[in-house]
Image (cartoon, rainbow, N blue to C red; front, side, top):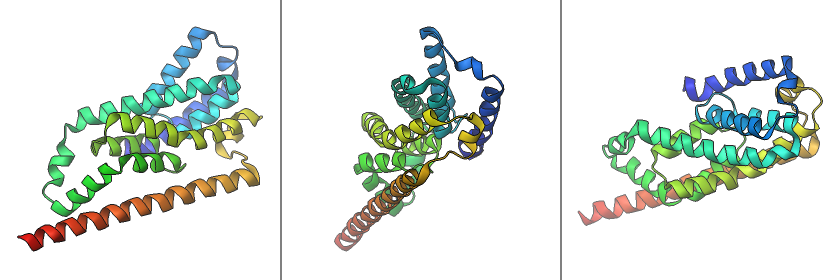
Length: 222
């Protein structure tokens, strides 16, 4: 929990301060330097060193709209790298452990069958930590291709919005600590949270109902 939740906060604060003190570092980057920058972004997001929203805000602030395609690619690669890392560390231990709790395991199986919607909704919510959700979804062993496609689609609305905020900002510290989203922006954020929250509730509730129905049916047969 420290690595996946607390560390991004510390890392984001440190990166923001360093870039504030040395703002010329990311001005007028060459093609090779841009590749290096986005490579660092991939590692920072995958290893939970920087919060994904902060990375998007900073990239929009320093690179402008020209950096958006690289940001999307970096996000996708970071998600894939985080997925591979979590899978390597877990080695199926969580799924094996869940077999000790048949009903909980049944719910997880049902959630995996709806994994595209589940992934999409977790990526849509601005408040859910990127690295933490990557780790959790990877432990559930959702299919990798489905994980990647749903992650990209789910992150686009909020990422494009925060990227736009970054391009409009005048001061990097004020941008990160209190991004001015305006009235329309606040409505959009509330809408994203509402959609993600209601959607996740619906997906979990339906999975729970189906799992319990199957469990009761099996018990009646026995």
